[in-house]
Image: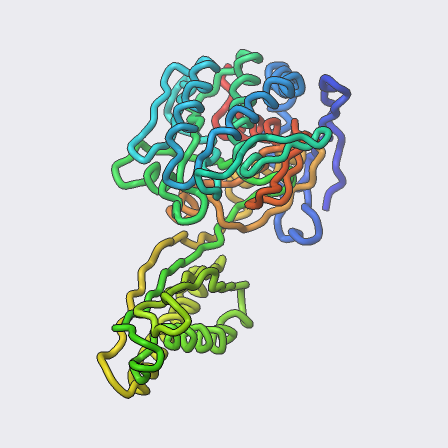
Length: 440
């Protein structure tokens, strides 16, 4: 590999230095040795970061901490459980308007969309963070403090992502930057739980206004670039029967017994898929049913999550589940002494397509070059995020850092603290400008 030459860039406010980019292809860390930053994207980022307007935008991010902290508190303390994001959405729409965006709408799914027009408008770049959290409506979301650490359910995942969007808008405006492409700033619904990506599915539905590039903000680590999607199939499976007294009706087929058989069979046969090839996982996350200890239940249910970065593997583990369910139903019915046969309902409650990423794609290259320009060694990863959907449709998409340090996500003790918080919006600014084009 060619040795890297150093590019001299101005020092940012607060003594933040942008690490110089090499003129050759820059290797990533050892875990991602097969991915390199191609020379043309290194050169593109060198030219971008040399622009005085871009430096002004990057510098301005460092001045926003106090305002951003207050806005993070405001948004966090508005509950936003799946399917009930409307109050937070309305508040976020007001925030976008306060940032000077004149074209702000809430679409049919509940997504908040603010347009920052470009000079040509021939291309549309979306920069999005999801509005919803995993917590039910009654959860106490009051923000508490331990020093600089801010503690509240959902404060990191992904309320901080919404604040990152606001910071990027402020920085672009302060630097008087105009892009060639239109940039959409989106607070989308339905990323968590049984939301099933309904927000981005609506954005990319047939007949929707085109989005050429999608950049999601979700995740704390600055080096993390999600370029491929871990897909998932989720089911609620319910075995049903007549039910009855545990003594008087003994001999009836038992839905709980069928459920237990199905879980055991699935767990026994799933390793035929999970122990070979690309990582594939499964989890029976919830079970329930029955009315009392001395009653044969009239129904028993379970909820199952299966994941893989390969759609073929995901389909394979799904087939193992379906076979286990039908075998368990057959065996329980054959063993009954009396009464009608059990039935089973298999309801798909979630589908996220697996999506193969391309490390050489322009957006991925630009995201890596932007991250490197800020002194961070990028790490290409696959995960389950809003980017799954556009990547599966062949639309360039990545998921990137919201900035800061997060922990204990999806728990009541979730926290966020402003450690290197500037990196999230700064990486976002550089990636957006590389993709949307810096107008003269």
